[in-house]
Image (cartoon, rainbow, N blue to C red; front, top):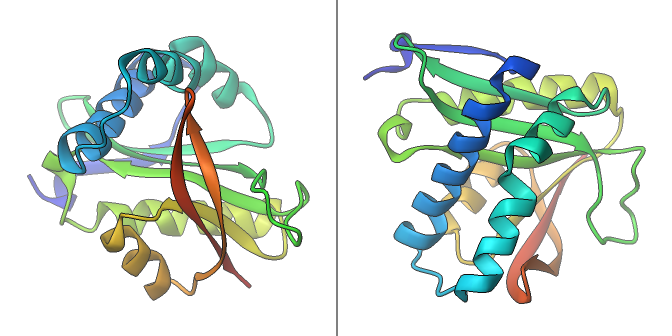
Length: 178
């Protein structure tokens, strides 16, 4: 599959079920299978339901201050996404008046084809319009590939924090651009 076989578009309310499934699958591929983080089962189940459940995704899609883009294959499957909105990172210079890239994920089958770059450009363009000023994101401290991707796009590490997965805490870095 190539980037030419994918359509990049803004997600719509009708995408809630498929996007929920994509978010869950991408999280699992990345953190459970790829990085093998040993999340306790109860913490993982609570986090996945709260973060990637269809009702949560539907609320995000309906929120006027949030935006999500998807990469869709010709057969209709969603293979990657980017989700952005008001900044909620715990940094003294961050505020909800500034924008944050919450998530940028591609299933393994869609990686290495430039899809992340296209989704990132869509999110950054929207953030620049919706939230003029600095752009923020959080990235897992162990994901050097993602950190390099963001650094190439002008983001720099400006802090760190604990990202909760149930009662488990992941060490995350805070990145800012602008």
